[in-house]
Amino acid sequence: MPMRIIYQIVLILSLLTACTQDDEVALKNLIVNGNFETDDGTADYTGWRGTAHLLDTGRNKMIPLIKNAPPQGGEWSVLIRPQWASQPGYIETTFAGANGTHIYQVHAWVKSPNWKAGISLIQRRNGESIRSKYVLDESEIWKQISFRDTFDTKAGDSLTLRLNAGYTHYRSADVQFDLIEVLLIDI
Ligand SMILES: [Ca+2]
Image (cartoon, helix red, strand yellow):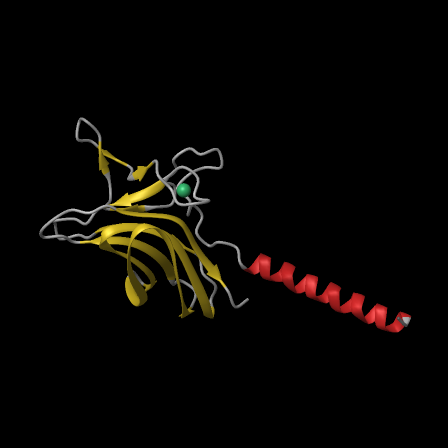
């Protein structure tokens, strides 16, 4: 094979490698704690807040994490139950997006036997929700769900990912989530 062709092949391969590395950099998870645990398997609720909670034997509220997780999900996941009151059962986390028009890809593992699990990506401006993408799903066993949408944000806007079990008027349900990712896929 002539040296010129070999050189061109090597050049193309190195360009392809460079593209792959750029993609990996762009696909950083924007959610800081989407696994609900530290690297050594300790339950971790950092970055999340909401109405979901568990009760200890003294009926004190505790963080809503349980020792059960999907494949590759370590030890812990979040357990959210629908609420009877005016607020839905939910947790959420707010993260920094990128100003301008961008495509965000959401991945989450969910287990919600006989109940709808909701995931929404919400854009807020001056404290008001101005746009959201909402997906509902249901699964007897751990299952990954994904969706993507385009958001046009400007300085001062915030993006929030909400995991939701909603309301109930007739029975309770267990809705679990783990391995939450939000990726900026068009950089
Ligand atoms: Ca986990």
